[in-house]
Image (cartoon, rainbow, N blue to C red; front, side, top):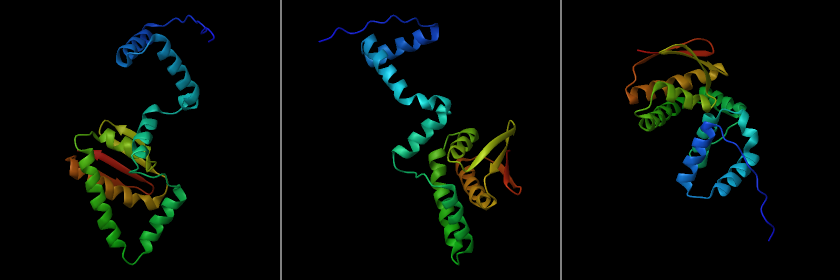
Length: 176
């Protein structure tokens, strides 16, 4: 067996603290921790330029199979079909029930958490205009009612008193 290559590294204070926490938590050798970290970084280095919190949300949502990735054009096509369907009221009733179910999952979470989670789904982009005011910038006008109904039910279900006003391709949310 070939002897391992030895390398000396220098840590700053933050890196040293992280390293020590990893050592205590994993109970692995220093060398094993560095080898695993290096392999992990090599495999995932392209992710460095993305928002790590959004990546965590994506993994959490997709890994359990409760969510799907849907092309935006398909999303818009479905909503257009709903708007012209003779039984569209049934869809909106069902949508409200699904939103109420989500409210149970969001119970105890902040408005920021809820909106950021939905932003990660690409329903809208958030522009915070004041401490308790947000503008949600929609990608398409047809999504406005879907998002508004969803937020109304979720906010009511978690006990958040909010006013939602409509613009052409935006929703303005004010937490009261």
